[in-house]
Image 1 (cartoon, helix red, strand yellow):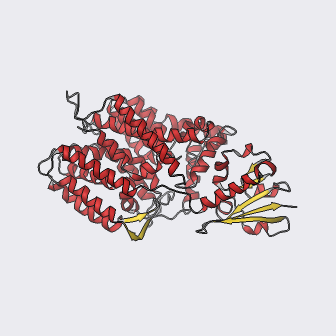
Image 2 (cartoon, rainbow, N blue to C red):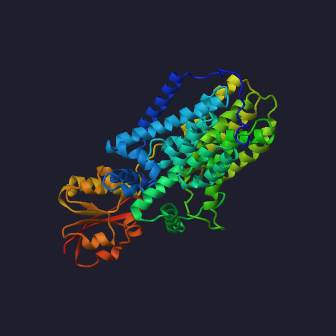
Image 3 (cartoon, rainbow, N blue to C red):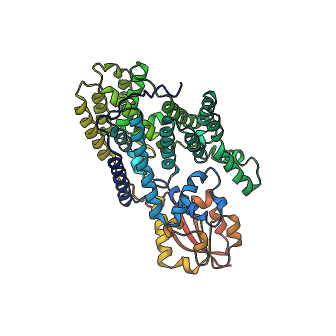
Length: 520
């Protein structure tokens, strides 16, 4: 019973501190509302891709093929294309609801695992600052995390067909789960669950079929993945095999990560029955990304060590941390936890006690709060205190860390310049009077328009569209997207066919944008 050893069924019907479904739903909607309100405060962009992904959802309605591929993440887009028709507020609301209901099912899984105070699972999820920072943002990781914890929930209720279908759908959102799907499929066959094992392949097969209809490529799934891997192989620097180990305290938060380390110690010292399902989900996905960032051994596509890719594991970390805390508060002797917690504490001090922007550490700016809260987390886990006192202390420490670390993400860098371009265009009614060529990903987002919704038309800037653009077109050229993706160098505008109208840049000079009119 490889994946069942973690669940011990008893006759106990009620656990200490368990919420009713009404109360749990109330908490869930409050969390969604808080995320929605925070979106109005944290009104910048974590990465500019948010805007491009939203426009891709809208583009589906004029060309369904645009949501095919690993960049678009087809399974994610299919969930969002209808809400996108209702505008950005509807997409924002869906993001917030998905993140909040991820907490809902973290709670439900904790109940199944007989955690005495399952609300600790929600605390462990939403005290992960990066999870909350991205909870309202348009990224596939939130939906994937929701589907992952939902599939775990149904697995522990012995609903193998639903579990298989959910996991199959994850595969058309995030291809990194294929290794885990293979292992899970073998396990299902071993357990003689033949129909669920077959159903694991259903959505990848349908996705490949859609790709075949769109491109006439019978191996669309494989070839599209390979094409993206070849394109990104050297596009982003690999951060090293140990990259995600070093940044995990910032991604998962000090308190949940300390709880996870305690879970590993409890497992190693045989104080708890290991949950192989959750450990396999977390371990295989985590190690897959470590391998993709390996510098000395180049394997697969380079991901650039993007921090947000790991929040898919946030609900699993939250459950394991809650289980660990639930067990620790019942132990009289728990100094054995220090075998792992002490090395972890010093590794955090050395590699993770710095300020950061949720993308990279600033190694010139030590963060004492990380040091202090790491120590408090260790003490909370090993000190002999009454269970109720420990629960209150956990809430105070987790809440204090969240309040200390949370900061709104505001418009910075090239996003500031793109908003200025949009504002100038709107003030001068460019969208009403000119054919536009522009590759800036936030230009359409700020307008909340597809290319075909511009009065005189709009196209992405590339060599072909520039050549064929009618006289009088306004061309927004930039040093990032136009050159990297459109393959249009600035030298293309040195002829007398073009006239410079205006330029923009940001304070950091991360991008330069020029407006050029085609006059011949």
